[in-house]
Length: 479
Image (tube, rainbow, N blue to C red):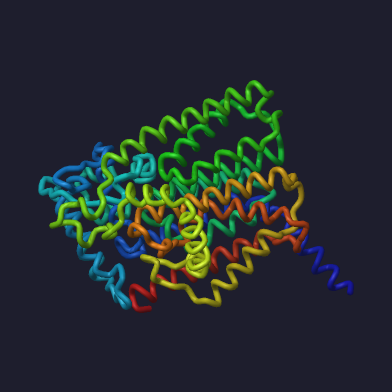
């Protein structure tokens, strides 16, 4: 009995000790180190849509912020060497046994850039993205392009920019969340998160913005100090990023309406700051919606010689699909319900981690264990966590459901044939910015589990990293 008491006292000491207090900075280093390793180990263009994100980031790095639309094609002029590199490694995207050799990658590192030899390259899906989603790539890619470095080195530079931005976001997020550090650390080191954030993708900026926004909301909810001018501008910037990178996540900004009036320094200041944030967000949203609409080209209208093999679905037509739904609004309910229920096993697995182009599966035992760890993180015993009223939880649930519906409808309008019954595929990475809101709501349940020590979080993060790295090595390099 005495020995058991000593064990429990030691457990609590570790939970509340210096290791837990240093979790934000330790998580930053772990995220940075593991991200850099994965950025080098993941073969070129094997992350979701990385090839098209890379083309878009290349254009922005050269000062071309708007996607070109010419001759019934959407994209931009890219050095032929970059296109050749992407074309070579694209053969491995859906291969059941890629068996890529290290020599192939080492040889590709020697491929010269030759920037003067260019060709038009199609990237219709990422062509509609806002340039702000590629800020991490601007850390290194423009300089390396000017120095005419080999294109594969430039790809790795873009990945390193993603890793740095995401790692800094993890540090900021955990630093603002003394009551939710364990939960958000668990989320940051899920295999899907590790994989996506070690690639060239606009999702890095999107996910970082969503995490920081939620962290700031919870911080102010827990300790309702008045929002400073810097914080107000930061909130406006985050709102603009969310609305411009992927509009469907913009409702997360409505969380700010749940903060006490005292946080805003009075009712009048609340309306002024809220109106400015809303105005900034709506202005950019409307501007970029018009820009995206100008380049949107469905499969049937795309140049017949170039449309096959692109990320375009024959029969998908956004305006026609929208018109059909407006004429039969009850079909929307069926589409949402079927897409949610039928796809549930898919996004339940891929949220933890289905790597590559959504075909590289992790061990099912690990996925179950990861969900169990996440459940413990949600129901962890913690001190000084924010108290949510039923009104708050109802509004948060409404925000969650609205984004859920918007994700389904956006995929349905963009990728499915007109009149399709449901969305055929909902990838787990779509929910990286959204599910933390659900986990925070569930954490309000009157159920508490023993507090998780900081060292357990760090140990679990290395397990996730090891499983992710091992899966990548086995799948792509044969062990």
